[in-house]
Structure formats: C-alpha cells, structure tokens
Amino acid sequence: MEKENAVKVIIGRVKPDVNQTPSVSACVGLTPDLYANLRCSPYRSGVNPTNWQGVGPVQKPYGAPLRSGFTLIELLVVVLIIGILAAVALPQYQKAVEKSKGVQALLLLKSLTNAANAYYLANGAWPTQFDQLDVEAPGWTGTTKFYNNHVTDVRSNEDWSLELRNEPGWEGVGIGRISGKYIGTSFAVNWGSSATARNEIICAEQISKISQAGSYCSQLFRGVLNQTNSWRIYKLP
Image (cartoon, rainbow, N blue to C red):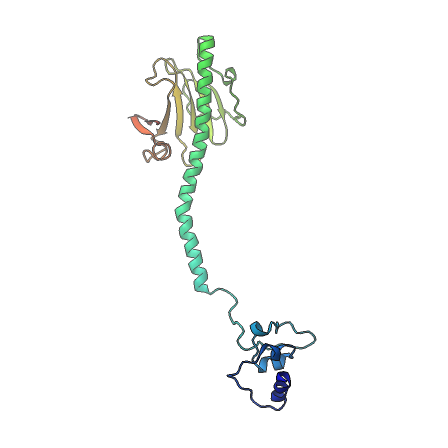
C-alpha cells in the first residue's frame, strides 16, 4: 500500500511530505527517480542507489554523504606531525646505530686481547700478525690504516680499521673508525710494559677530527675523560 501511494504521489505530481520519513519497505524495489523523490535513505533501506541495473544516470539520494576525502588543512597537519616525529626520532636512531657498531667492535677487540695474552703465555712475545691469533674476523679483508705508526698488520671493513702495533712498551691492538660521522674515534688495548692500564680497553677521540668533546666516547659509551693531548682518552666503565 505504501508503494502504491508513493507511485501515486509521483505520478500525480503531488508534493510529498518532506517531514515524513518513508518506511524501509516503501523504499525497497523503487526506481531511481522514485527513490530520490521519496527521500529514501540508503542506510535505512539497505539499497545501494548507485548500483541500479538497466537504468540511466542516477541522482544522488537525499541525505547521502557529500564528503569523501581529507581537507588540505588536515593533510598539512598530518605532514607537520610526521615531520616533528622524524626530527625527534632520527638523531636517536642514528645514535643507536652507531652504538651498535661500537659494541660489535668492542666484542671483537676483547676476543683479540684474550687471544693475544694466550699467545704471549705460549710464546713469550706479543703477536705481530692476526694470523697468529685464534680469532676469526669474517669480512675484514681490506687494508685501510687508521693509526699509521708501528703497525705490523691491518684488517679493515667499510667502517673500521683493525691494527696490531709493536711499538716497544706500547704493544697492543686498536680498532679505529674510518668512515661515517664519527671518523677519528677508536678503541684500543695496550698490553706492553709501558702501558699504565694493561689489557684495559680505552676509547679515544682524535681532536682534529672530533671537535665536540665526548660526543662519542662519553655520550655513547659513558667514558670518563682520563687525559688529553692530540687525543682525548676515556676510561670505559
């Protein structure tokens, strides 16, 4: 009965009551024109008014959402928030990456120190070649030097240079950064007779290359400044 009344309203050009919402049953099965004129809501009837079969252009039903995207202001706010988060998080991420690389270098240095002491006990002399030590370092195939004086053997990769030194009284092993932001920093162990702290790992910053004191050894590894010459030497905890 409701559908028949609706059809009569349209055919007779009688203006429907705009304040009266038709029931769901009155909206189901209507043609697009009747659907629109009766102000049927697609959310009440369950009918998709944009998917009619066998009819021409479809009018947008009354009350259908007009907005389908974001405004320019909203997009600008999102971009601004992302920029702020990136500015805060990126430096911390870079420090975390550098510290991870430094930790790996320290682990290798500790292994080499233990192997060098074992070699000294067995042979009565300090090693001068890495092949004399029972430690493998895959990927260290380069020969780039970090510290040129009294170096007897060197292995390097894209980030670090690993060196054995035989300076009398200052024999030891060092690993220095040869690329990146912190080029000019190093870790070293001196096991010779002149070393004030034998077999202890120190962190060093070359002043000519690392202008901000403690930016590596102190901030990343909590080192305590011990002495300064052309290098800043830090004792590690």
